[in-house]
Image (cartoon, rainbow, N blue to C red):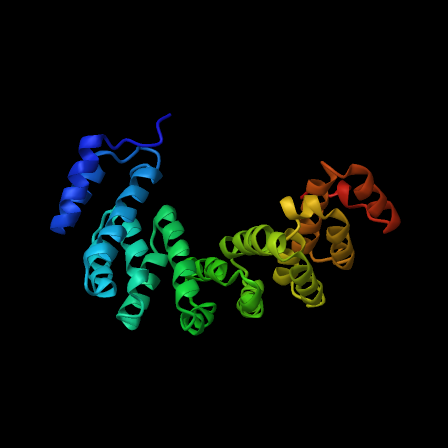
Length: 291
């Protein structure tokens, strides 16, 4: 299957439209090559358009941030999903030019009905906070936003804090989200961002924090802790995983127990003897339960 549907002529036309700031015709062209699966063009084609707009603005505009705001606003106000995906990847670059309006647009796109548009919003959140640390205070407030879509985008914003000097900020951002009872938020926090992203890069610091959080008697917090090892990090560090899971294994809450069961079953695929020994040593009978 082809990863791009843009022809060389299409690309030349797009470059011409970019120079003319004729963004409407770019959208018209992209709408003609959108796929039936996602309802938008191929990822490679969208990336081509976004990268070329960014390159042109940086190379030619005397005020790039203002131009990013103008272009991003145009796309984000359109109804097409492709437009919103393109727009949100432009508008975050205008954060310093117009912080309030940029945040308002980011918030709106993060709560879009289309899951794919929300994926782009999550990436935009991460980029915004990476380049504008003052965005941190805003996303911290949004951890309590009424929309689970927005709170999920906040989870992804932490990717922009995934470095040594910002670890404490990332963990502080995670803490209120650990209590979130939204399945959409949870499945992106524990097993994905906490486990796959942070634990793989900062294992010692992340596991230390997971152990601290595991003492909290809340089913959502503990679900996230257990599922933080249900991934490649857990597979590479089964002893660390079992050490933390031991704290959770006696929890009678069904949500927590199912998370522990799921993670132990996952780990047992590659570490069967180790997991069986853990179950026997701790007198667990979890595999008789349905997860």
